[in-house]
Length: 236
Image (cartoon, rainbow, N blue to C red; front, side, top):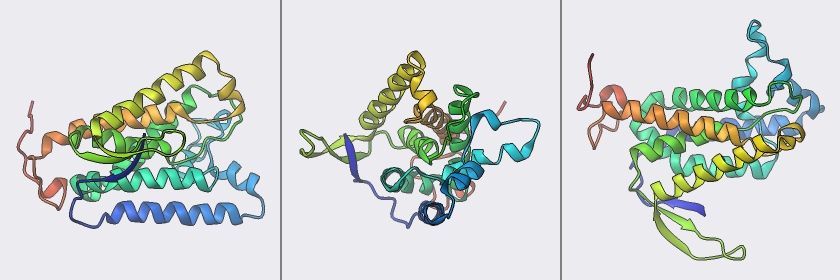
């Protein structure tokens, strides 16, 4: 299943989503234009065996790696999913959206690192952060309809499906694929899809979305969290 369009638009331009997409495109340009691509990747991607939590300079790739991509298709798919699912989430979170995005990405990158801490294979990509946006979308907009391509021999019908169905299906694909790499760790050794980054980012976004949902009425003020109304806040 490949999402084409969210049928419920938020009615406002997704400024932060657009800015993040632009940042990814600009970084990808510098990445591909670099005279020494291997050096560029080595400097800004996560090289797991180099991570040393007692040296902060080795930890900056947990952020910088979120803006690198392994190719134009990798970039395009990540940005497409961010554009589809990010606008509604941004409308809810307002200026907190980029913080949420980075936290989800860092959490996903950390989980991927934790299962391959001795590897010298670079970890890079926005997938974990985008997965976090999808996790929050599942909490906040589970009933939204998504125009979805159902591939049958490459092409197929486009139908409206509930967001919850698409996102839960996507997560279980990542989960079981991640289990597969754990059982057959050759993928972690030789490189491939960072399933654990997807899992970690999605779960982080889901939990943060669940927490933040307590600060909203069903139709929050478009200004975001701090301008919304506290309708379900729980105080100890």
